[in-house]
Structures are given as structure tokens and as C-alpha cells.
Length: 316
Image (tube, rainbow, N blue to C red):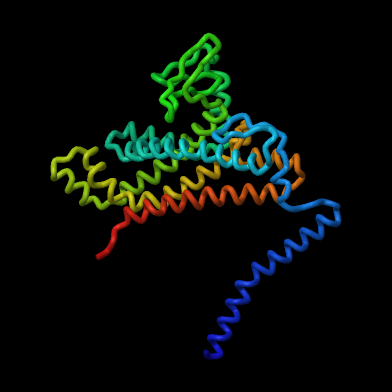
């Protein structure tokens, strides 16, 4: 090993150890400050009874369950909101992106107006706007709007249950049966979908326009309609351009679901804030929130990365 190589290796080791040393110093400083103020630290509180209720969610949770179960219920609620929000974002965004390259100037102009308006209004305003609309404009649960199998009212959205096939029905005291979701759930899903769809539309538009013009002309030479050309020739080639930024958009949608705390939806941040106020373990609760979002985003990124690898062109 030459002297120059040894110096470079030593420098890399020192640079690599610097963050570790900083972390150790910060942890020691934190422990000293907490001890000086008579405050306890640690994650043992996770096994204590939480003592607060969670109004909705797919996981069974009761007031006497532990803080750990409460955080898991919050993570499940975040995932429950994020999945339909990403699905609606993909659907709306794809339709808007295709419409943005329409030969009809009126349609393309309307899409451009929507994209600019949606992207330049803060997401929190979207959330509050949808929540206020649901609670003020919609009718009571005894007289809901009926949209096929869907019932929409101030009580939220009722739709056929996807697992049991049970349909909602209107009874004497409101809606019964089916899958019923709260107005808070409906508001955060719709806010995330309408906001993120504007970004998704731009991603789809850019991806479609990245395909060489010759591919469009070849499709027209085969007497394919514009929709057939997009579906069969252009879209498969555009996917390799669309997916990388789409993955980032999906991850941001999951993180943006934290704004559900503003309207009382019990997601990770809401559960973490309540746990923090009751237990006094602020640093621990914040670290748990960060860890849960990290796990959800890594799992989502890994899944979508597999899809991305499948659509990439493989050179022979």
C-alpha cells in the first residue's frame, strides 16, 4: 500500500466515523440534560396502557391497549389512507396527463388551469377545504346523496364492502351495512388525490411527450386511433420515464397523509402527538413517528422499484 493510498484510506475512515462520533456525543448530551432536569427516557412506556381512544381504523384497538398498539393502529390508518389516495392519484393523474396532450385546445387548457391551480394551493388548504365541504354542503345521513352503490353524506362515505360483498342500505336512523368511512377519512383521501393528481398529470404528460415523434407517426401509419397509439405503443415506452418520478410522488403522498392530524384523523402523527402529551416522552415519540414513516416508505419504494426494473429497456 502506497503512502498516498494510506492517507486516502485514513481520511475516508475518519469521515465515516465522524457522524458516529457526533451521534454518540449528542446521545450522551441528551441523557445528561434529561437527568439534570429529572426526566426519564427510554421506550419502556410503549408497554403501558395508552388510555385514549382511536375513533377508527382497520386494527382492533381499545382504550386499555398499550402505546405500542396505538402506534401500530396509527400506522395502519396511515396506510389505509395512503393506498386509496395513491390509487386515485394514479387514475386521475393518468387521465389528466393524457388530456393535457389532447389536440382539443379547450380540453388541454382546462387541464392546464387545473394543474396550475391545484399545485399552487397548499395541501393543508386542500384538506381543510374538502373537510368543510363534506360537513357543510352534504346532506344528513338520513338523506344521503346516492351515486349508484355509493352513499355520500355528512357522516362520510358508504360503499360496498370489498371483502364481504355487503352493500350499504338506508335505514330509519341512517346508513347501515357495507363499508362506511368517516368524513375525516374521505376528506384526507380526496385532498391527497386531487393535489397529487396535478403532479402526476405533469409526470404522465412529460413521459408521453418524451417518446420520439416517429413512434407516433408509425402508429398513425398503421391506421391506429390516437387512443390505440397511446395505449399500445406510446405508453409502454413512456413508462420507463414516468415511473422514477412517480415513485417519489407516491412516497410524498404517504408522508403528506400526516396532514390528517389537522382534521382529527388518527394517523401516525396524531397518535404520536397524543402519546407525547400523555407520556412526556417527546424524543421517543418523534423517533417512533420517523421510524414508522421510514418503514412505510422503504417498503413502498422497494415494491415500486421492482416494477420500475421490469419496464426498463435491457440492452443485449
